[in-house]
Image 1: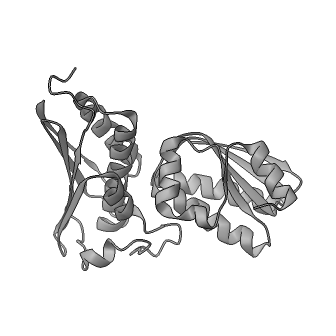
Image 2: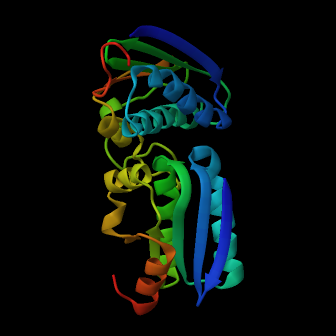
Length: 116
Length: 145
């Protein structure tokens, strides 16, 4: 699991590549939480375009960070999910609270313009 | 296509990937679609993760994965000799988690139920749990071609 981080206008973009399961979840959690604290991000985009596998542990990772970002008054979104990752997102019901976009550009535009 | 295999490994989180990839490789003998293989991988990952997190809860035990291919169906049995489940219907309730770790979504059984055709759970307290999952591979041709 590799996590690349970018900051744009207080929005942290966390791009994950590899497989997100219980084994890799803690690493992702730690990297993303450190970045939120140290870079002063108030909103978060999970870029899943490099994910080849995800199970329900990935939902735990997203929901946990959603709680943190919400407490900071920010928004969380997801982009780049493959069809199989997207099916896990659908089954979990997470799309009711977190918007899912095609790519980081669309996610960033919607987040910065406040359109949900 | 009739075939079977069995894996045994320690309840280490590194083995979650090993288990789902091994089952996926074995299931590919039935000529499944990519979606069907992804369904199987997710379901196996959930069951093995449950064994690691809940059954052995920080201790190290053995997880067994046994697969049987029969015509166009795969049956996967994932068993442990861990603490067992006190209330199976509660454990299967969506969003319920028996874990104190706030990172757990409580969706493991929901994913297994959604992606597989049948699932049954047998458990005895302090003795272990066996999750049996069955999936019909619709794309498989009888000749395996």
